[in-house]
Length: 258
Image 1: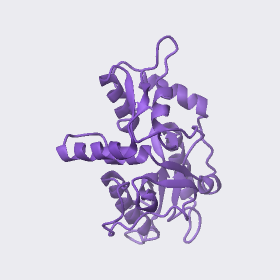
Image 2: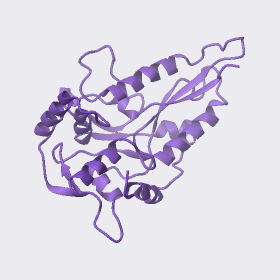
Image 3: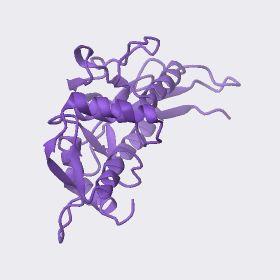
């Protein structure tokens, strides 16, 4: 029997494009209609769409275009939806925040402030992203042709305060009985110099959890999405409040080994 409902986990990063042709992005309370993904065929699509995000966008297009196609054997139609959570943090995080913590560990607890004075990024606790997927599954079961959430991309956020990712990393590694695991440097490396160093690092071919240029670009960006579609169509309310999200995440990021 064919799969009749498909919830695809995409990422809000598929919408990031350079602001005015620069190295950074500007997303201010944008909805899915306003924050449009770039054209993957456009070789000038910009530096912010890393290969990870590009592969997510290709997959998202395939999934959403498949919405409404007949199932084999005449058993109805396939209904799909693509969720776009912002940068995730929390248990089992293998990428950006964990990468910053490990970098700090290698520098005796110091976390250099690169990408200039920093932008503002919206993060989502992984438990809330998981809850949104369950809500999407339930809603998709009731989808009919031309209605509901079928065929839509949907941003997923929670109530985690919008902050500089480096400042967030310091906060989420705070410990009650000792100094924070990550201490931000008082100085910062200018954005252009940071990007140049990141570009040279990529040329070395050293394996990293994310492209250095993509990290620098992200850190310098202002990113804030509107989750109105998720609230209305999924009846989505974050399952974990911000305080509980922080508490649960701290237990993970303050472990001796990550």
